[in-house]
Image (cartoon, rainbow, N blue to C red; front, side, top):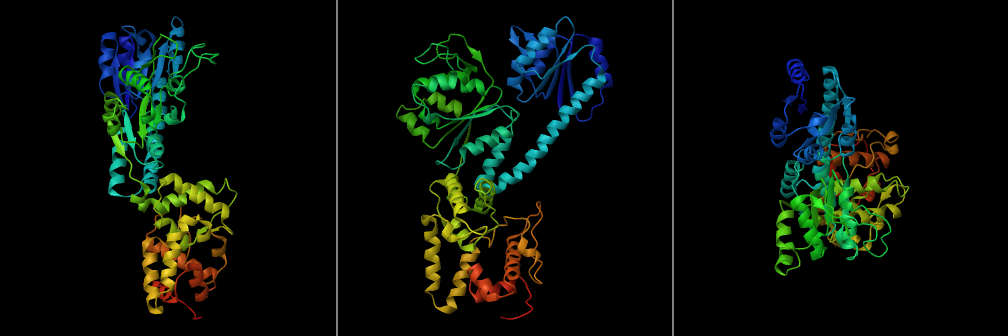
Length: 492
C-alpha cells in the first residue's frame, strides 16, 4: 500500500520516516509544494495524509485531482485551529476526514492499518467473487479471455465498450468492472439511453437549471453528477442523438459538464462504461454515430458471446436464478428433473440470459412439491426435449438404453439446489448420497453417483420406480450402477 504524507514540518516528516513500522506499506513524503505534484502524477497512491496548505496547487483542487488520478484513494487532511475550515471544505469535496495537529505517529499508523485491512478484505472478497464469475459467465476460452481482460482493466480509469446481443449480460459485466475497480464503494449508475425521450435525455444525463425548459421548476442534478466518484453505465449508447453525442465527447475529453441552461462548467470524476447491441462501426459509416466518440469509448472493447455459445455456464446459471427467484415466489425448490434440465440445455435462448431468468421464474411459479418438471417450462422450451423423448420411445427396445445414455451424457444428471434434503435423513442403506459442503466442488461423475444414490434412497431401492423418476430405462440404470460401483442389496 502506497501512502503519501505531505506536511511543511520537515522534522515531523523526518520523524515519521525514521520510526514508521507498518509492514506492507511504502511511504511517499514531501515537505515542499514543488515536490507534491510529481509524486501525485507518478505511480499509485492508496492513502494520503495532506496538510491544508497543500490542498491548492496552481489553483487546482488537490482533493479532486487525487481522487481522479487515483480512484479509491483515502484522503485525510491534517489541520490545526487556524485552518480547520479548509479541512471541512476538503471533506465536502471528497476527503474522508481530518486529523487535528499535532498528530502522533501511532494515530497515523493505526489509520493506515485500518485502511490496509479494508483493502485486504476487498481483495479477498474479489478473489471469491472471481471464482463465482468463472462459473456464471462460462468456462470457455472466449469467456476466460474476457474475464482476464476485465481483471486487468478494472483498476484503471479507462473507458470500456461492451457489445453483444440483447440480454447477453452487458450490464452485469459492467457491474463486475465497477466492483473490481477502486471505485467499488462509490455509485454505479446505469441508464438505458434508448429509454429516455429525446427531448429529455440531455437534462437527465447532465442536469438542468431552473426554468431552462417548460416544466423545469427547480435545479436538477443529472445522472453524471449522481455517479460522481463512481461509474456511469450508458446502455444502448448508439441511441444517443448527435447533440448528446457531442456533449458526451466533451466530457470524455475534459471531464466537465454543463447543466442545460447554465454556462458554468462542473468538473466530475466519473468513469464511463458504454454498451450497445448495435454495430457502431456501421452507424459511423452512415453518419449516425460520431467516429471520434467511438474511438474515445472504445479504449477497451469487450464482445460478449450469446448464451448459446457458452452452454457450459447453463447449470450454474440455472441454479443461480433458482436461488435468486425462489424466495420472491414463496417456493422452496429442491430438485430439477433430468428431462427439464435437458430441455433447458438444448434450448437456443434467442433472448440470452434475460430470457433464461424469465424461463426459470415461469418454472418456479408452476412447480409442485419443490420439483421443477418438464411441463413447468414454457411450451417452446419443452419442444426439443419432447421430440427427443418421443424419438427414443419409438426406437427398438435394445436401442432405447443407448439413446437415453446419449441424452444423459449431454448434461449433468442433477443440479444440487439444497445442501440438505429431508428425504436423505430417512431412506435406506444408501445414505452415502450426502450433500456436498458449500466449498466442495464435485466432479460430474460424483454428482451423478450421489443423485442416483439419493433416488434409490427415496424409492426404497425400487429400481422400477427409480427408472420412472429419473426418466431412464432399466438398462441405463444397470449400466450406471456398474460404472459408478454402486452395490445393491436386493433385486426388484
